Image (cartoon, rainbow, N blue to C red; front, side, top):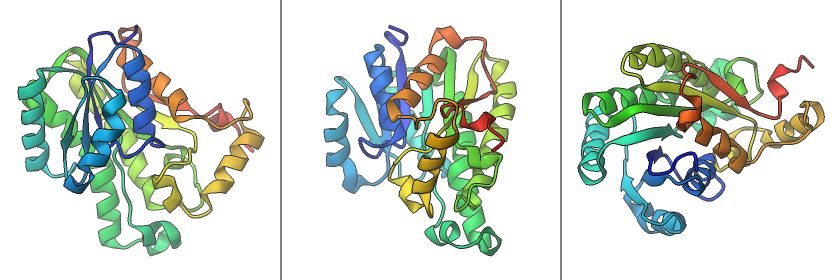
Length: 257
């Protein structure tokens, strides 16, 4: 098994339809011990029920993934109770609804800052706190999730596309910084998937149809397929890969029409 005896932290799990869940399932089936963070103390029972199938897993509430002090407090507790980690998966992003439903030009200053803060800075903060707390084992891997709207205009994706572009650039700079200590940093650009977050994007369903029509494989991807890519990137089999955006989208990104 690719991740046998490896401890993996998955940040931002919400439900069985989330990409984070697909990554958790793949990692668990490949031998990983799982640790989770989630938002909202009121969601504790729901999250504990959700992860109950992953034997031995633990979950920690984190109500501000872009708040320095909250991330540090949570990570200190995770390290104290679990020891060092072999990988971190960052599955956290958010933009205000009105900034996804209106034309991009009407994005507010507050909405722009919020999307960048939660969706991009939180990953930088995650990497920094993990490094400062000496929380990572040798050859640990960090992964975040992005989308094709970072490089091409996807109607309705709007400010989230800007945030994902910032996130992808952050991946490259973090890879250079953390590579000095033999840690790897990569992103997965998944094809459109029916997640709770995707429901906030105007006319999202049309993206699913277009991928089926235009992608070389003529099918949409599943959370489990994305999870398998994450498992590979967290494993020793990808030890020479860092600073990359790996597309898991049935090849849609290569098409010009």
